[in-house]
Amino acid sequence: MATSKIANQLSGCPSDAYVIISQPGVNAADFLPRDSAPHLRRSLGLEDQGNGKVKSSLQIADVVGELDLHELQQYLETACEAGVLSVDASTGLFATVDDLKPRVVRIEFPVLPLLKSDRISKLAENDAFLSSIIDLFPTTRYTVMYTTTPVSAEEVHILHDAKRQQVFSPFRAQKREFTTSEEDPEPSHNETSPLFDKYQFFTPGIFMGLLVSLLLLSILSVGIAAVSSLQVPYGAFDKEMGPAAQKKLQ
Image 1 (tube, rainbow, N blue to C red):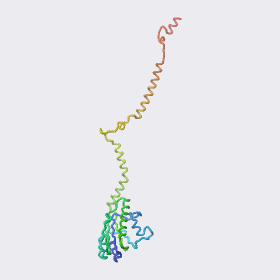
Image 2: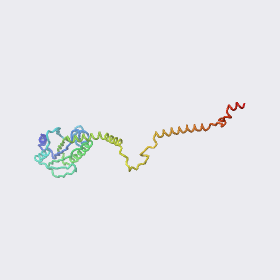
Image 3: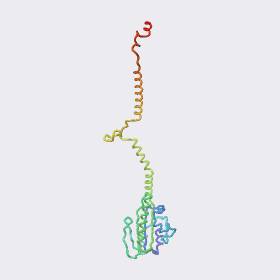
Image 4: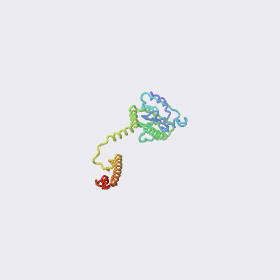
């Protein structure tokens, strides 16, 4: 069991302070970005080729069952005669101690957010908070137990739904706009918009009709002018003055 394995590592009470950290809803991929936990990476020597402050480390990747932190705390209280100091991670408040008695510092971090950018930011914030707590220790002999729990199936389902909503939300918005434009509601009697904004009075069809009408009027005016300019003498229609009458007169 993981609890007994850790207890065996601490059987000799090698430290003056024991920090037990619980970070639920996190996995190994959350620690891959360099800005997610810079202080922790630096302490483990991951940033400067193994030149970290940590003398030894023990990593347990997969734990079968549940790691009982309360049992581990009770073991340190009994075996190492350590006092308990609880730290409120949400407010950053904790009591200060002046004696040299070994201490068990319990830090309970809240569950990480679902979005990746928010998770990295929150991990970095928790990492800075942890570093500030360690800097307040009057001793350099301390042990940090950083425990994590994976993301639950329900949280994974919510995360996938959130990502799916982000991907399809533009298409849904376009669909709503398209439906609204096709199914226009009946015009309201209380609308106060100008008349020329509602209707189009000078359409291309009306424009072509006016051009054709002007062309026909110009042709008609030319024809009327041509007919009115013809001059025929009235004598041409008199029988006595016709060609037959002129022959008789000869």
